[in-house]
Amino acid sequence: MRKIIACLSLLFFLSFVGYKVIERINLQNQKQPTQARYQATTVVKVWPTRAQLLRETIKTVGEIATVEEALVQPRVNGQLLRILVKEGDQVEAGQLLAEIDDRSLQVQILQSKHNLAILTANLNQALLRLEQAAAEKERYSELLKHRYISQREFEQSESAYFSAYTNWQVLTEQLATAQANHELLELQLAQTKIHSPLSGVILKQHVVAGTNVTSGTTLFTIAPLNRVKLKFHLDQKEATKVKRGTAIEFMTDALPGQRFTGQIEDSSPVYDPTTRTLGFTVILPNEPIKLEPGMFGTVEIILQSNHQAIAVPQEALVTLQGQNGVFVVDATQTARFKPVETGIIIDHLVEITSGLKEGEAVVIIGQARLRDQQKVEVLVDEETPVEFQPKNTSAGREGRQ
Image (cartoon, rainbow, N blue to C red; front, side, top):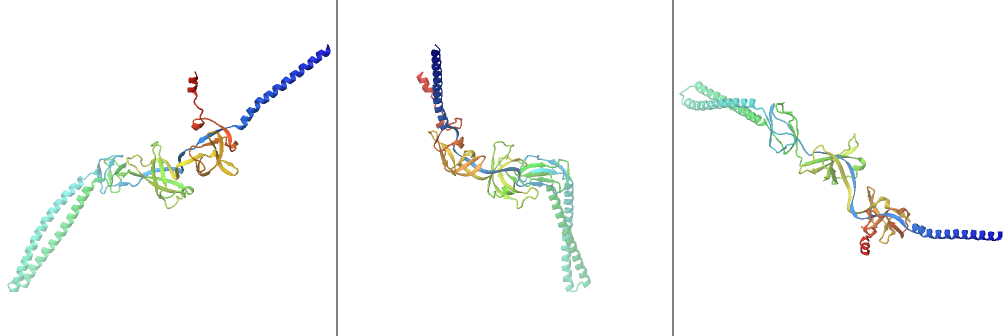
């Protein structure tokens, strides 16, 4: 009996061990394909290459200033009677801006006219006396020839002639001086009207009506704004990359979304001894007027530009057997290594000058574990190329239903 129980126990034990061995073998057989698939397939993320704008730039801060401006000052002294414009007004060359009280000049001009009239009358009388004295001198000269008068009488007539001539000369000079003074008063009267020396905008009004002004008082600051000057500075390292004619773009928070383009026209001859920077200027067209003096913004200096550049993220580049290149995934989801040549690097994008063409899918995540000709699984997102997107089979399912 004991032998039977022992035999049954041994048989049960051997059956249990055999079952466990078979179960372990089956489990290993199930795991091996999964591990093989995991080892053979790597999940990657790809970047679809496309032609895009790529440019090397320098960014700095710039300020808008006027190209030219005029300080309007009176040429005569007096009280400012009226101001006909205000800050921000557009004015034309020759337009009346203000008037100075001219009443004292008006009185002086009336007095000058009266003085001119008197001097003119006196000069006419002096001319008449001169003509009479000349005739008398001529008559006495004839009488002296025939001995009808004495030499002394002739000399008296001659003296009277010279006296009349001298009086006429003095009055002539006085009249000329009076006329010059009158013209000066007329000019001063005209200068009480302040006109704009150029077309532009009133940037600043420095005085108000009623102010006593002199020839050194600034009344207005006027500048044309159809063109403005953009000024900025660069340090020594950056300044050496920039030259006359280099293109720039200017943006300011005051005008969001707008870009103003121009070219560098001039630079300072020396570096600023305080900041150790070199100043540059750009003339920007400004019609209609949008940019105003004093505005600050960002200047983007364009050193190199390629409007049809093929670029990839910098992390896509790998080195395989001493060659720089990238992994490209084809339609069969096979990763192939392609050697490339690179250009400029802008904002973590590397320009590919040769080795890639537009539309190729470059691996940007997972490339470090790849080998050439390796099968991959592409991670799908909104940037994944169409050929790697899952097919829409909803229509087929609906048909089968």
